[in-house]
Amino acid sequence: MKFLVDIKKLNRQVYSSSFFTLLETHTAFFKKMVGCLLIILIFSSSSFAQTRKSLESKRKQLISDIKITNKLLAETGKKKESALNRYTTLQTQISKREELIKTVQEELEFTNSNLTKNEEVILSLSDDINRLKEEYAIMARKAMRHKMTHSKLLFILSADNFNDAFQRWHYIKTYDAYRKKQAHLIVETQKMLERKGVQLNEQKIQKENLLATSKEQQQLLNVELKDKIEVLKTLRSDESRLRSNLAKKQKAHQKLNSAIEGVIRTEVAANRKEARSPAALNNSKSTSSATPVNTRKLTNNFSSNKGRLPWPVEGVVTGYFGTQAHPTLKKIKIKNNGIDIRASKQAAVKSVFKGEVVATQFIPGFDNMIIIKHGNYYTVYSKLEEVFFKKGDQINAQETIGILSYDPKSSKSELHFEVWRDKLRLNPKDWVR
Image 1 (cartoon, helix red, strand yellow):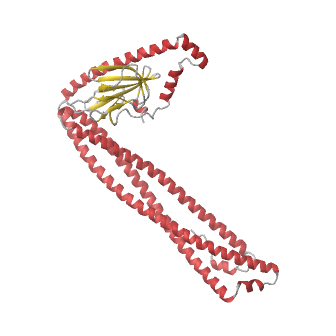
Image 2: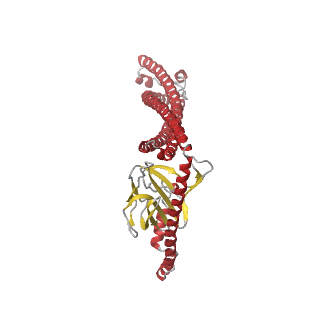
């Protein structure tokens, strides 16, 4: 970047009428270039900070998730009965670990890119400040020689006429102001250079930390992949027991589904009957809606929070919504009407939203179940050791509704969580944040 015209050209035109125009043009051009440089630096710094913050936030969340999974793996142990549980938890752990490594690599690439940019900016600023200092030194020497040979007053009084005197006075004033601005610019450029130097050092330290993190996570991933292979060998040698357990689980799941459908069918019928009542019809005329006002309000509140509801328990998802392949048994499909969240032993389970308890029931294989109504939406929580509420109770959002069951054979505490809209099953992961 070259912000200043050749000082010799300025010196040749000191007494010409075009000097003032040239000086003003040069000053305006210089201000514009410095302004552009500052805008570029501020914008790039802001963009870098936002992207860095986003990646850093994602990395911290993944590390937090991995810590939870590590704790669950430690609780599971390596018993034969808990092999499948360990395998599914390891799958989740490995997936999180791979995502973490990918995120760290993105951070590294982004940091390297900004390191290069900052190095280029620093080099440019260094060149500019050296040029500014050289040109300022030339101006200072010429000004000193001018002072030694002429006084400002004599220089003005020696003019041929008033207009010439005025131009000489204007020249001296403009020249002095310009020198001060250039001196100020040198100081500001120096400060900017120092700030970019500090940023560069911070980014180099960050790069070293990210490289160390990437290396550590890759080593841990290799250990987990070996562990997964060993667990899979154990599971394949015990397929008959797995098939027997799967058949029992599917029967239990059918009972759970029948119980949920029965409760929701009854509730939907009651809602329709209430909607056809004289009081509800009168209310609908005044509100232009066939839905009671309180139900409509609850429905709107729940649906408007899609993707933002809190998790019912802190843990990791080990079973996903829909039809999917069994994690180890070949050609076997399993169907899940909700999600399974692996959590710590006797973890507290909380309601994801305010509502009314419409059913509590014990289902063999799924232990205690509680269904909470939110307008025409329902959330279902099963595999609870204890439930703290009964039918008809009002529940607040994030209120503890029970404690998770613990299976000593598989060393597992796992919540089965479902979301329904009337008779339609929904994917819970679309609703929680």
